[in-house]
Structure formats: structure tokens, C-alpha cells
Image (cartoon, rainbow, N blue to C red; front, side, top):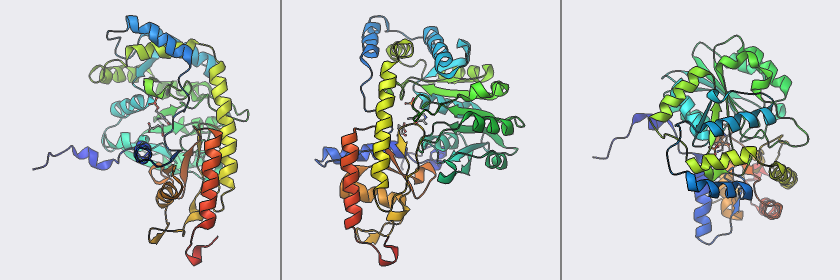
Length: 405
Ligand code: PMP
Ligand code: GLU
């Protein structure tokens, strides 16, 4: 008899972002040239001053710390939030976890009872619905459109709220679209939420990665009236190129902090002590590396957009932040491949991987069929080379006659 696994697992698929990363790595190991636009992580090494601080901290980091992070790190998070986001939380409202993904997972665990609804605008980061589904939650997905800059309108939010709504998850700037809300747009959403008791979880992990002078505004700054049910999630992974260090946090009202602490105290205990020390160095250190990485991402974004828009059949709006382009690839449907015609974003992603070695994540698991996510955390040369190949492949491709461009 096979081991019977918990039924809650039936509801969720494995992470598509991680699956594409694994597939690209396999292909590369088999000797193929692969252009990696899959996983969403900076390709830079963690800045040297952070690694040096970690090396120093090794001498004194052998033991458990407080389960939700050291007071020194919590204080550094509060100072950095004040400096970068313009509002000042108190250290006892912070819980530090093993990455922002862990913080979001713990939030689902402490908030969700079976049958509770969580409002999630699509396209969404793949893990938001999956985490709530693991606890019996029901995602209430709100469609957004490229023409609206992939931003949820207040009326769409209002229509999705109901008696079972437990929480709303916003991500700004967004993975996978790069969409970001202006202060006025956030205010309009806050007004709708003022009449409810839904918890608002705002994932601001890409807050430092915004372009063309766009100003990221923290939800906590514009809607202090929601502070008793507002949770801000953030971390060092993206801003400081520290994905492997696994430090992220939630800034939450006291009752939620207490619940998160209980869960973490019974599960992981503290995030790695030396990684916490590295995170303090990152948050307190000089800012020029952060600016340098952002400027490089900004140039890569322009290259990525120009390259994608040059491919017949691909259309792409301009993302305001993060490091993703999220074009429509529906214009490529009909290309013949492996005995059939491309008919979904998943087909397109597999075709471009096969034909050009381009690894990017199809839109279906982000709740956005017809699109493919290209991460531009890779060099401009790689972007140019890969997209030139994609264009050539599209121009050379056989198509079903009724679907010719
Ligand atoms: N939120 C979003 C929107 C992300 O893209 C990621 C990237 N994995 C995370 C949270 C989690 O980041 P981490 O766990 O590395 O802190
Ligand atoms: N956030 C990144 C992505 O979306 C990293 C992978 C993950 O944690 O899912 O690709």
C-alpha cells in the first residue's frame, strides 16, 4: 500500500517558478545552452561588505537566537523601514522568518480557517493561493488587465469582498507583472477596505526596485487607519541580492505577531543566526550597491522590452518595478511544434525552451493564461542574444494557416 499523504496536498501544485528553474538546470547539465529567464532572483553576488559582516559574525553565531529574530535585527528593520518607506514600526511588531515566503506561509497558517476566502488580484505570485489552499482557504481571484497596468481597481476589489473574506493580498511592485500602485491608487483601495474587517497583507519585497522615477509608497504610510489589520511583508532577498540567506519578515499588529511567534516557536525556531547578522549589515550599510543594482535592472528592463516588442506576435506593457516582463504570447499560438499547434502559454514556454533554449515561466500558474514571465535578472548580452534567437525562430516557424500573423 502506498503511504497515504495528507489530503490538503491535493489542492496545490508544486511551485512553477521553482519547477522551471529545475528544468533549466537539468537541460544545462545535459550540455544544452540555456538562457535563464525563469527564476526571480538577482544574478549579482551579495555585496562584499555584507559577506564580510557574516564572516565576522560566524565567531559568535553558534546558538539559537530569539525564535522570531534578534532584537538587533528587528531594530535594524525598523530603522530601514523608516529610512526607505517613511514610517516607523516598533521592534515588537516585527517577526523575522526564513525568507518572506516563510513569513507569508506562517501568515496563512495563523489567519486561515477552512472555508475562509482570500482575495488575490491576478496575475499573482504562484505561492499566494497555494499557501492559503494548504489550510483550506479559498482564493477569490480578481482579474486585472494589461490595459489597466495590471492594477486592481477599487470597484473590482469591492466586488470580491464578502462575509467570508479573511484577507486580501497585494503585491506592489508585483511579481509577475512589475505593476505598482501609486499613492492615490492605494488610497482608493484603502477606502474600500475601511468598511471591512479583512486583514490586508501587502508584499513590498520589490519596493526598492522601481524605475523611471516611479516612487514606491508603502501601504502603511498611506493608510495608518488600517494599522490594526495591516501586515507588511518584506525581506532582503531582492534588494540586497540575498536570496540564499533566507531572511524575510512581517510587520504586523500585536495579536498577529503573537500568533506568528507561537507558530515559529513550534516549527523552525529562529532563522539562521549568521544570516540575521548579514541582514543587519545589509540594512545598515551603504546604499550605493542597492542603487547600482537597481540602475542595472532598469537598463536590462529597457533591453528586455525592446527585444520582446521586436518579436512578431509578442506584446508587452512597461513594468514599473521588480525584475519581470510579462508579455502576451497569444500571437504565437498556431506555431507548429511536435506534431501540434501551440495553443497556450505553457506550449509557448516549452516550445521556446526546446527551440531556443529560453527558460521562462508560463502564465497559467500566475493566474494569467496567454502570458509568459521573463525575469530580466541576467546580462544585457544574454537578453539580446536570446531574444534575437526567439525572433528568428518565430519568423522561421511553420504556422497553422488560419493562425498566421
Ligand atoms: N514575495 C514575492 C512577490 C516574491 O517574488 C518572492 C520571491 N521568491 C517572495 C515573496 C519570497 O522571497 P524570499 O522568500 O526569498 O524572501
Ligand atoms: N520569487 C521568485 C520567483 O518568483 C523565486 C522563486 C520562488 O521563491 O518562488 O521566481
